[in-house]
Length: 228
Ligand SMILES: [Zn+2]
Image (cartoon, rainbow, N blue to C red; front, side, top):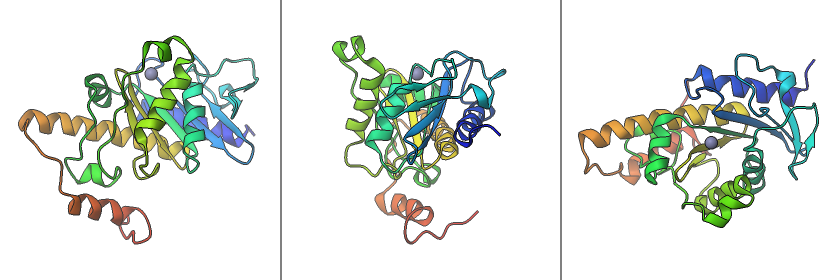
């Protein structure tokens, strides 16, 4: 039996092509076991067609690889930084899915234009500031995680389970790796919807707070009642 943490990370990684979120090798998912202080993440440069659970690479929270010989995804320091910033989370996903990446490249947050968005993200999906030259030149991936944590600010990590990196693309997270992958799919869908809505009405305003709050709270938190 493969390590359960590797299996969780593998299954989340395989959700990304299934959800139509990645082309080639553009994407990665990780799963964290806080008790063990370890995460499992996709290896660098291995295509989804041949990926196995055994290929997942274990990394500790200082970013040190516990080796199976494969190199962890080059985005690993970003994942580690996010696990440090958000103690509630147990999974992180990164993609270059085109709708969310369009907003990231434009340096614009995704406003909440409807209830699909409000069911999962309590308000806009924020976008980071551009990284400085120094941040790109040294410890780029670590600094990417740091600017995400900074732009997320005082928001609830699970209330806004993702952010856009300026000129780059989306990172999402959740209590588990599967939840982070689900949030990546939701973020892509609401980004595509927002692009279409803006094309139809460039002056469109975000939904009012009473609608945002109603939809978010019926799925999340103490008074949640929405069921599938
Ligand atoms: Zn990327």
